[in-house]
Image (cartoon, rainbow, N blue to C red):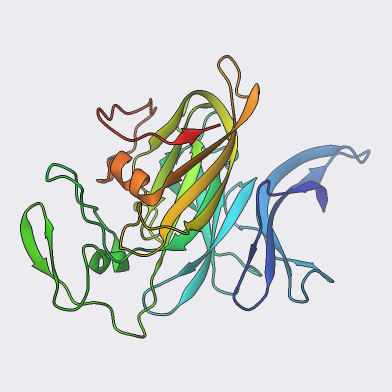
Length: 306
């Protein structure tokens, strides 16, 4: 029995198979009083899916073990050729919850708390977007940090053409290019207020291995001040001046609520590249903190806000 349900909010996705997926959540009626009044409800995330391009829809099973609400989905390719559906959900438990599906959203495995991604009291909507990992990231200055990678993504950075040499922290490293059948794994970007106390300081986090709840970086705060719901989009720009590996430049757009006194005064639109993200986030994952204020970056690039 459902007391109510809602979609997203944010965006849905389409898989290579053509399946359409719309993230959703429902308040399930756990028990009722004698006279039919609702007694207890709990929120659960799930996905609606369609295999006939929207003519008919089915709903998948709830994330089974943890209370979860507003959510978004990413189709995650892995280096070994496998694919999983990744769900990142709002939770009243103080941290985000993530869950995986191996059957394209019909059933989700048990959720896991992501203690690097904090929630304010009562939670807040956050957004996730996936994109193919770049094959090389060369710091622009010797003092810039080198990307710390998790899992299968470790062999990706740094890397260039066959037999070529790239300098990372002035150490020459020779790395072969990936084999022709190599599948670039999916990295995931996440946007959300970064404080555990209130809806303030919109930030973005990066995961290079989404299966691992410990793979998330500390945030790059893109807006300091009250902020709330957001939605991310990924794009490839038609020029390469901000490219990581000489190909199309990977860029992101973030639409989010914000203001000076309240998170709901205006809606802003920010654009930034993957290069900006890598330059601004603390790349070494740190221990979770009870509260995260805006980190001090010193000389860093900022995103464009309108």
